[in-house]
Image (cartoon, rainbow over all chains, first blue to last red; front, side, top):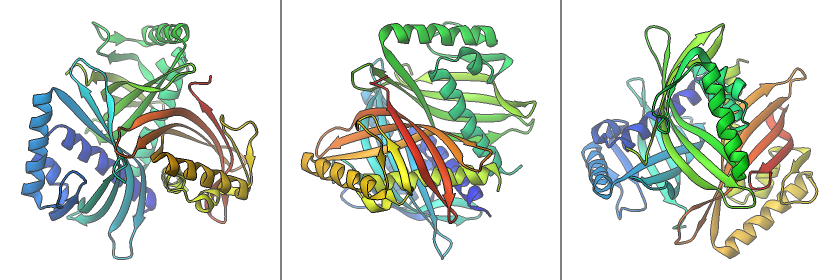
Length: 138
Length: 138
Length: 138
């Protein structure tokens, strides 16, 4: 497997993962994490662990957005892929979150940095660990 | 042809296509569609079909931007490529449109989702069908 | 080396280069240019040349941002890679610069176009020449 193969797969992984997230597909999104996957985000006091909790977080966020009449898009860019000796992938990226109210103007809601550890399970990339920081809370 | 080959070609295709669009090169941009290519966008009541009409739309938009003293940039991201059994490519992506007035501050003008059907003609990728939705008009 | 190999390498190059820049790592960033690399940017009256001067510019900018309590992110997208006959790479891209004040909201600070000439030195891509234009100063 060349670096180009790996890079394309990682880019595709993030595209699909963010499409699932922004569509509010909690189970689909949680399935892109390992069963015991961990997501440490700035808005939660403790890291979230495991697919049921990850999925529930997406459903909750989607319900809030529907109630507020807003659409969110997660746009991941500047993806740096570093294959580690143990076969896992360290991936650092930037994530813009864009919010658009129904009938209104889009705005850049949050600017984040995403530190992932990706592993391969049954041929598929999955997040074992994700740590996200917000630029407004350095 | 590996998935990496395809992925790189698709990314390059969008980069060039958006450069042509933002430069106001109507003919160049229309040439990235098939001769009977269709573009369904939210701001038009009917889908636009065929290169002459596609090119005319770009020229009209470019003239308006020049008159308004604004530059627009189309930034496509989160590109998910799905090769279909018939050899065409289903590509879903996000598109940010950034507007910058001369001497002013850039703003996120529109947040869109782009659903493309790409085909290969004489070795080149082309859009047979493009459907764009705006997040402010769900 | 296929186009996919080259494309992945270029994407990775920009991701790492922007991470170094936004981290204020002047020497690391300057090391992604050739020893006599040139950077022509709109905010400077003359092009900046050579690693020491490039690094000093990053340190100065980072100090200003720290004093202002802001974080900047450079997000490069729509990367079009054109291999030239002499083995160099002409790369045109868009660059969003996002600024986030501590405790505040992120904003799109600048929208730029980046024209690079990349060369390979000891197996690594490096910028020999970079010319950046700002959309607000056409």
